[in-house]
Image (cartoon, rainbow, N blue to C red; front, side):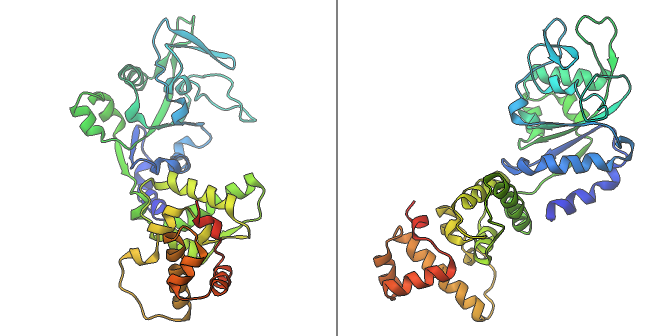
Length: 332
């Protein structure tokens, strides 16, 4: 995968990285970054056996570590919080006991946190995060002594942080504290080789969840996914595969199972490469795309589509059956 290769290029640096990493992406790329953040975390040899914590957008609610704030109970540990947020989980990145249960925050133990969309963090939360990173300490509620914490941050954002710093929306000192290594994740349209692997990953997960026997994508469906530009990046791809898995009536996702927008805009002809001499399979793909175009333009009207293709209605039904196309998919 293109993204995997990108991460491998950073391996040497990450093996000795003790500070921060900022991952820059377009909106929607972040969907796959949790998995790769874990891989980055595993690269650090000094972190073997230490805990990893991922904070998604549902947990980014601007809680800050401020003295005298609301007490939040995390199992048997209570910490000082203004409200729940990034840092509510920051201090609970404590060592994992056997069985994986977070028990307590101990001194001088290392851990890694993946912060999703750090560019949306409030200014107060930025101040608190900077304090933890600079001082390496947190204070439990009612305690007189601070606890030393040793955490490494992997932060992701689709925003231009340097611009946010210039506009006063993001602290400059926190930016430079985090931005020890910068990793830019290309949008999905720039790494089309990743599309089949990601699509199959999402398909396997959806099929298990829905208890369906759908196990792969047809060649025609993969062609359309590969030709589509994915303005919504990985998040959009996941939604498309989830819908297609729901609609699929066989072991393979067919072009007709894909969303209308994918069928309209994701035709192989949009790849922009020079056409190669056609073989028999190429002619079949061309015929299938012509049928899809006719059904799309006529909103699934078999009579009008057959007239446009200059075939009988029965002949059109036969060809649709051959390519796994369902008329209902074009009437949405």
